[in-house]
Length: 455
Image 1 (cartoon, helix red, strand yellow):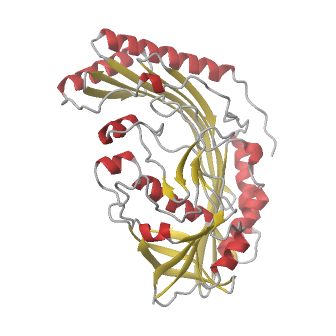
Image 2 (cartoon, rainbow, N blue to C red):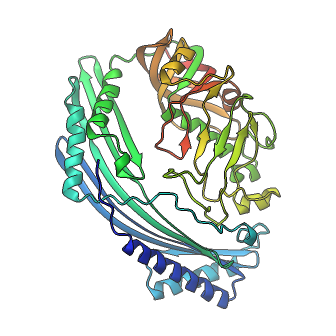
Image 3 (cartoon, rainbow, N blue to C red):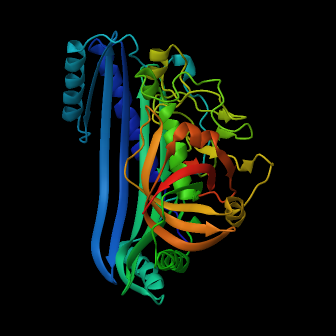
C-alpha cells in the first residue's frame, strides 16, 4: 500500500533537542561530583485504532517522552527518570539521582561501558519510514481487514481489527563524550476472528509488523489468512498421551530461541540461574546448526549500530557448528563474570537461525511437514511452564496432528513437555519459512521427541 513520507525536519530538531538536553545534564552531573553519567532520552508518537464488527471501538493518539539519568559516584550508582523535559524537572531528576547514589552501596561492577568500545560509525539502516495515515484512513483500513475475514463462510464473530502507526526517536549519551541518535518506525495490522457451530467455537488471529507500511501484506490477504486459520481449528480433538516428534511453526519456534537467549544472558549466568551455566565452548545443538547475530540488517526489526550503553554492535556467531560460541552480555554482567561486553546491553539484535538439517537439506513449510512425517505441529502455546534454571519445558499447546507429512486434523487441550537441553540437542531441521515479524528470525523447528499429555 502506498504511503507518503513525512518531512524529517521535525524529527531532526527533536533529536537535536534531546541530544543537547542530555549533554547539558551530563555536564551538570559532573559538576555535582559524579565521576560518570549517562542519559537515555526518547520521544515516541503513534496512532492506534481498533474496530470491531465494522464500528470504531478505540482511537488513541500518543506522544510519550522519557528522560532517564544514571550517575556514578565511584562505584555507587543512582538512577532517576522523568517524562517532563522542562529545566526544573530535569534538575530535580538530577538531584534525585545524585542523592540516591550517595546512599547506595558500592558495586565493583558498576559504571559505564569501556570508552574504547563506543560506536564511531553510524550507518543508515533504513529504519525510518513515517506512515502518513490519518484517523479516518486507519479506521477504513481496519474495516477492510475485518470485512475480508468476516466474508468467509463459517466465521461467526470478530474480536476486532487494529491498525497501529508508531515513530520513535531516541538519544543515548554518556560522559565518555558519546552521543548516539536513533530514529525508527514500527507499524502493525492485526485481526482476531471467531468461528462457531453446534460443536463449539474457535478463535485465531494474525498480525503483520513492519518498518515501512509499503511492506504490509494487503488487507484482504490478512483477513483471508485469519479466517483460514480460524476455520482450520474447527473440530479440534484431544490426543492420547504419547511421545512423538514435534514441529514448531515459525512464530512459535522463535520462542524456543528466546529461551536460549534467556539462558545465555548475563543476568541469568551471574546469578547462576541457567541450565546453560558454563556452557560457552560446548556443543548445545547439532553440529550443522548456525545462529548468527546481524545488527546492521537493512530495515531489521532489531537493527542498531550501538547497544543501550553505546557499545558498537557487530556481526557475531552465537551458535557455531552447534557450539555455544559466546554469551549475551552488557558491560555490567560481563564484569560480574570476568568477561567482555558482547554489545548486547538492552537485548539481542537480529538473531538469524540458519535453515538446514543433518542431511544438508533446506525445506519450506511443506517440506518440514514431510520431514515430520507423523507427529504434532504446534501453532499455539500457553502458560509459563519454562524453568530456565533446570531447562524443564512444559506448556499447554494446540495445533494439528500430522500423518504421512499431511495435516490430518486440529488438536487442542494438550501439554507438551521435555527438557530444553534435550530439545536443542534433538533439533532435526530448521525450515526456510522464516517469520520476518521479529528480531528473532527463524523458520519452523523440528524436534525429534517430546511427551504429549492429553486424554
